[in-house]
Amino acid sequence: MSFTFDPSEIKVPSGHHIGGKFVELAGEEIEVLRPSDLQPMGTITDGGDAAVEQSVAAAKKALVESNWAGIAPRERTAVLMKFADLVEENAEYLGKLEAMGSSRLVSMTVGGDAVRTAGVIRYFAEFCDKVEGSVTATQENTLSYLDFEPYGIVGAIVPWNFPMITATWKFAAALAAGNAIVMKTSELTPHSLLALADLAAKAGVPGGLLNVVNGLGHTTGAAIVKHPDIKMISFTGSTQTGAAIMSLAAQSGIKPVTLELGGKSPQLVLADAGEMDAVAKRVAGAFMVNAGQVCTLGSRLIVERSIADELRERIVDIMKAIKPGPTWDANTDFAPIISRKQFDRIDGLVQQTVAQGGSIVQGGNGLESNSGCFYAPTLLENVSYDNVGFTDEFFGPVATFETFDDLEEGISKSQHPVYGLAASVHTTNLQKALKAADGIEAGMVFVNQHGRGPEFTYTAGGFKGSGFGKDMGREGFQEFMRQKAVWVNYA
Image 1 (cartoon, rainbow, N blue to C red):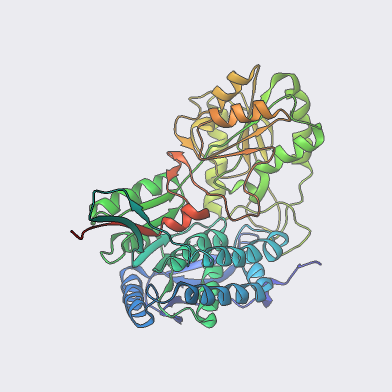
Image 2: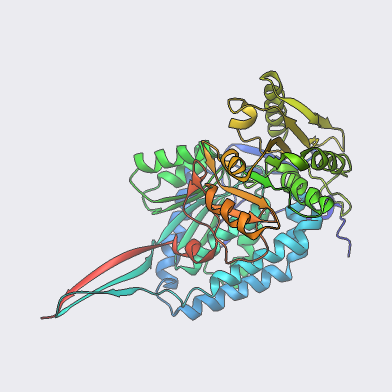
């Protein structure tokens, strides 16, 4: 089935979504452009303190009136299941809205992102009645136990590269744990999350439990982090912004934060990785998917020398065969860059890499297509470890290529002084795969693939400058609860 569509036919939500309904608030107007052709998609206002204050007030009211944290856990499950059903029923609309306003291709959103969004909600809904504490060993006539409870109101700030699915990792877990949540969309991709919030209200999620506000990071985002009644912050985005959020959270009244941040993820390719065409397709796809706008992007190719020339050649052939085009065309297989600003940043880093001694194997230029921002898949070589091409995250379809002679050297080259988000190992030798997985310092290691599969049980999160805390899995659910110790002397 083809989901090619006319973007002019898609209804675009307007306003903030606060207290279970759309709300128009005064503020600086921000024009939202479609990345595929840079045409206007709509406008939002920067909500700032006013939007956050209104959201917190709505959240407080909803928590009391619904007794969301106190109702039987299976009642929360039932409400969230209805929400998931409604998301699935509207998957085509949500997928098209997501594709139109982001760098996500419609071939990946309708049957992929939108349906998986419903799956994530169902996954966390099933945790509602599976919160388990523990009893600890004590002296006679004493009971000591550890329990979990929701924070109350939590905050989340989400990125533009996977707007729906990343947001759902946070709000579905937060709601299932018994919290209310105030979320800031990216000002570049606000609309699909607003549509999700509206479906939540229609499904029976008490108004005020899921609030979505629009705005800029230094205004609306900062207002969320600083608000004294928001007790915990979950953020996905750049390492620089994550550091600023940590600092602001500390300065404005200590509160916990979870951070999934940037990456410079290696792909370690051994000579015994398998059939060369399949390996090349897998490795190339890992740095070209979503036009490279992925935090776990496999942007450092570290290849065993004996296969390096052949693999490089096949990867270049794949890079040349792309079909860039609008995200609403089901035949497009290569996405646009989210904005002109991001396009210029990527190109600037590529040119700086070359100026510092690197060389371009393929790409290194923009593509002309639909007047949008398309950047050619780019492969760089001769990039030293003090070169910006190694030290900085491009967040675009750019990878570096280097070689190694033995496994120990390959593992050593896979390390990065700043980032530790993800890595992949490509080999048919299980012993080598496990040794590499043990040796690479990263929060996620994939073997014979790069990137997460369709399951919901894995945890997502990194080490070092790539952040701390987890999204998804049981750990992602527990991030939205705090542990309480109770000591009872009944002598």
